Length: 277
Image (cartoon, rainbow, N blue to C red; front, side):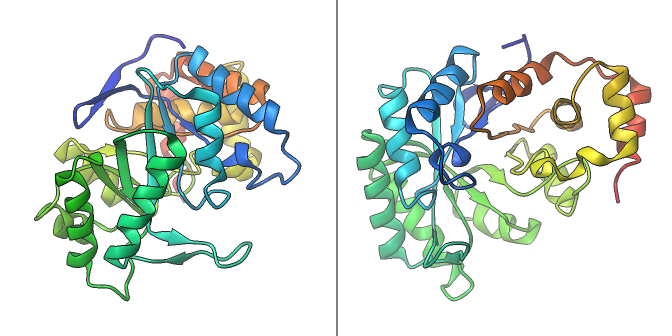
């Protein structure tokens, strides 16, 4: 991996370009070959990626199983997983924040990942049907029991983040964010001020914004792809940002990692900033 700044997520020291593992367990491509998926995960680590994101709901646990097969024992690689979201049927996602469920889900993640302690556990969604304090309390108990090292939240507002921080040491926030989708700009600004890692998912918008003429023009000037440019912009956007692009392709993985080497001038950054819808 090209030399780039590192970031402390709590006491977890990682490179600022991670890997989102969801795609390698067939979430997007049901025909994904397991052997190839393992090659992609291992190649990411070979390239210097040491922060890998997964969740118990990705492939109904299959994603965690796959990472364990590919990478265990993990060495210096930080594995972040999430609990609190279920998939009753394909394409359907439902939050489930009952304390007993969250604790059981974490136990199953420990088993699948073949570890005694989860490096970073993030609440996948705050369940509106369960008191938030009960959900945060379950997470705090997991830390007290030594089963979880650090805690984070996903898809939260600034107010929800503030509420959680009253009782939890929140070290990361994982919200949807990219160069053309900045709905959570205020959350990123809050995280930047407070020194909380901001982990944008869909950091390249699943490629949907690759057709932007201005994005394409800047990418061509830099001899880069639109995806690489989008990732480079995120790395410049704030020192607390840790993008987690996901792919099941070795070629795309290597292209994504190379984005860390892109040198964006103030002019490039201003033009990209103007893409904000």
